[in-house]
Length: 282
Ligand code: PAF
Image (cartoon, rainbow, N blue to C red; front, side, top):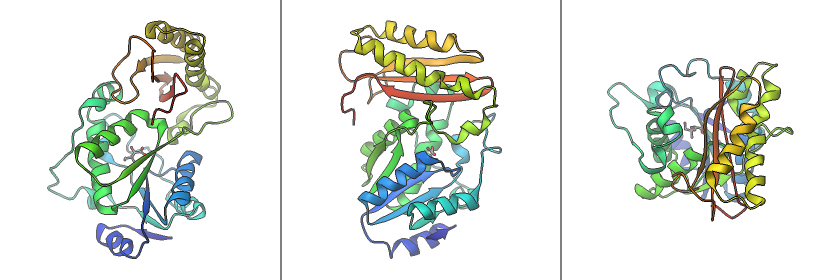
């Protein structure tokens, strides 16, 4: 596995990679969710690249950019064991040199939910993803459905800017009790951790409601909210029933629909999501 710290180095190494090249973009602190993306890329592509970059432009001023975990030696070992060929691990200065002034700003699926609460977040994501696609030039890129809104923002970005990359969305990987894997789960205190299953339990409740015939999105939402409200230490940020592509709220669950949840456990903000109907939602 070759680790490149600069754009020039990566481009030189990439010249020797056999197509198709699959990219797994990450901010490091790798867990089984990331490794499941690598395994899928490994199965589908001749070469696999991973980017490891904690991207400052997608963090708000009061968010966790400085304390975000950066276990880089461990990440390299996990990436290599999972079958990554090329790692792009640039510095902030390499990605955003002095004078950097051009951003990609998403509309559509970027506007609501995380977009409203984390101002500038998707602008940072869209900008860095565009740069990563330009530098790494993958034929395919793998994103987890854990950040479902991000996945839809990236799909929109690729379509709107005609980027020659196929986007693969991969299922959420969960702990045995249902908690979605996230690099931020390390922030949960031991006494908060058992209650963090509330998001998954709420999603399961929403799915059961729809399976039982409920079609009114507000009723499905209320059933999910009840689970969160009755969880010690949990506060709801939003619970939404949305169109799985546009992320616009739905009034009725008559076709493809996705439930999105953001909630705090103590001070730790968690997000999760699930399809409300088992259709192929792409
Ligand atoms: O999902 C992430 O880890 C990040 O948002 C991404 C896509 C690597 C962009 O920084």
